[in-house]
Image 1 (cartoon, rainbow, N blue to C red):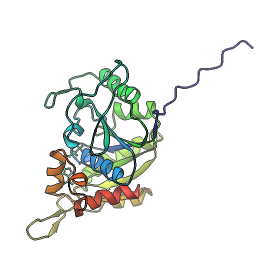
Image 2 (image 1 turned 180 degrees about the vertical axis):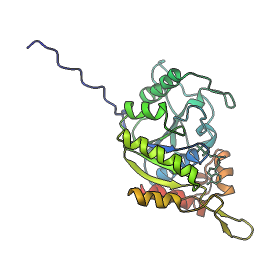
Image 3 (image 1 turned 180 degrees about the horizontal axis):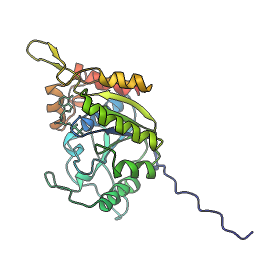
Image 4 (image 1 turned 90 degrees about the horizontal axis):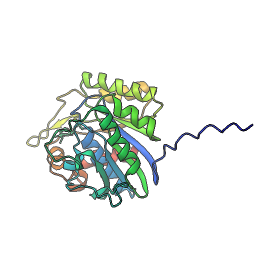
Length: 259
Ligand code: ADP
């Protein structure tokens, strides 16, 4: 009697957002941001309202991939209004730092920025918010699983064994933080010669599918290593936006449809 009720835990739900899906990889450079941007655009083409939060705080690439420059406004100094391109509502720490400038912040500052992006951005109504995570299994991943209600994670891996070893660590991290893994995507899966059409498996092939089968996780598909994918992404209009009916886009659209 007279004892205070224990405080309710703060809601981890992001207002207006139905599902939060993290895009993760064990190591950098495997095409996680490319996959995140193209999946986001593929999902908008399926009629979904999609947001993309670039939480790759040390190497934010979504401003360049989505072709967005400029700074989000904050009319009252509290809420942050995200930017938009290719039908995707986007927020990135890269909007705050001029391109080419390093984010030289200590961990607590970065975590503060991440929490701000999770808590203060006005996403509006979204069916899904994709979160482009930094590679590996560090602070950002932990903060995210503690501060937001995450529906699940998608792991991007190249076929090399070493990438898969790192990808296994990412899988293990999500298991430990109780985030369900929605599927694995194999990127840079095969290279089709634009001259002769021959397909070469430069980094090997099939490892991600085998790993997904072994773990009973959905395999979302294979994305080829393709010049057009790189040029489109690095040029600010990802292939699914630039050439939606190309075979290269098909691989991303199929993956989005399997989600
Ligand atoms: P990560 O987010 O894992 O660091 P990025 O998505 O930034 O990786 O990709 C690294 C580089 O590789 C970028 O220049 C990107 O355009 C390129 N790239 C990614 N996926 C492909 C692909 N399937 N084919 C060709 N280039 C790709």
